Length: 218
Image (cartoon, rainbow, N blue to C red):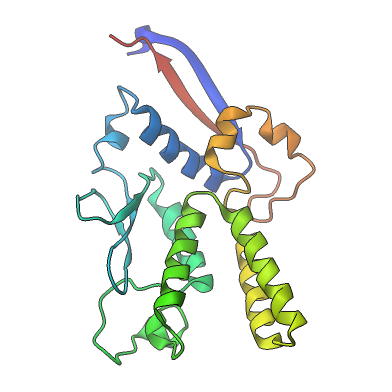
C-alpha cells in the first residue's frame, strides 16, 4: 500500500473531539479505498437516533435501513461515549423503552425524560434536533439560539427558565465540541492558525492532527 501513496495531507483541528467528528465526516464523504474498518459500518461505533415516538439515542456498530438517523463511525468509542454523557446533562434522552408512568434511575437524576412532568412532543422534538446539531458540529449556532432564548426569558422576568438556559449554555460551551463545523477545516486549512486567540476549555493548548493518505486509484 505504501508504494501507492501519491501524497500525504493533514488538517489541524482545535480539539480532539473536532478531529473525531471530522474524521467520521471525511470517511463518510470520501470512502477511502483502504480504510475498510471505517467503511464497513461494523468495526467502529455510531450514534443512532431512532424514529417514532420517544426516540432512543443509542450507540451501535452497524446501520440498518430502519429510518433512523446515524452519525459516525467514530474510531474512538470512548470519546463519543463521553460526549453523549455530557450532552445528556443538557438534553435528557431515552436509551431504552419505558412503560407509561415508569421513572427509571436516570429519570430521577434528570438524565431521562421519563422523570420530567412537563415533557411533551414539542420538547421531545426540540431535544432530539439539538442533539443532532451537536453531532453535526453545529454547537455555535445552538449556543446562539439558547442565548437569545435566555435573554428573552430574563426580559419577561422568567428567571427560572433563564437560569436553566444559562446552565445549558455553560455545559455546551465547555464540552470541547467543535466550535466550527467539520467541513470548515477542509475548506480552510489555516483555520486553527486563525483561532489562536481563542480558548478551548477542555483540551487547552493542544492541536490535533487528522492525517489521511491520497492514494493512486486503480
